[in-house]
Image 1: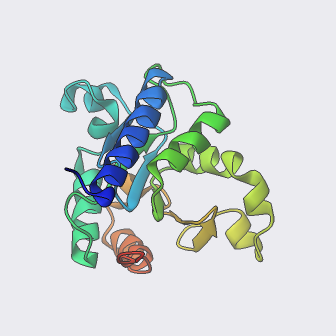
Image 2: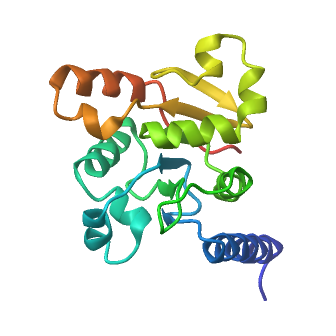
Length: 190
């Protein structure tokens, strides 16, 4: 006979599965561990991404050097190797997600930390959370300026300022590493 705790876990799993299935049916492109504490957000992908990801564009968008560098950085900070999910702010046809759908996706994934990896994702996040951002104490936080950790709707947001584009320059790579070091794992909430 299952315990109350096991039964509760099954209910949570069923709820999350239903939410993510509905989002997928609505055209949201996601990958990774739905119960992770970190979500990587990108706003662009290309045809090479699709080919590399064997059809899953969200996985493919983080399968190149930038994805490998982000995963290695997170592991170095103490995150488990599987502790990430990926979300694209565009659908399979490249059109931006509706802002409400983007918010719904982040709410369903419920990460503690959101890493914004490119300018297109930054624009989408700024628009989706415009009201919350407008209430930030500084203009830098309100605009999600690069390298500043901003708490919005219970999540830590960090703009990595075009992470993929920075990998070709050692100074820019070090700068992104300094940004990431601000976000150690939070640990268990209980």
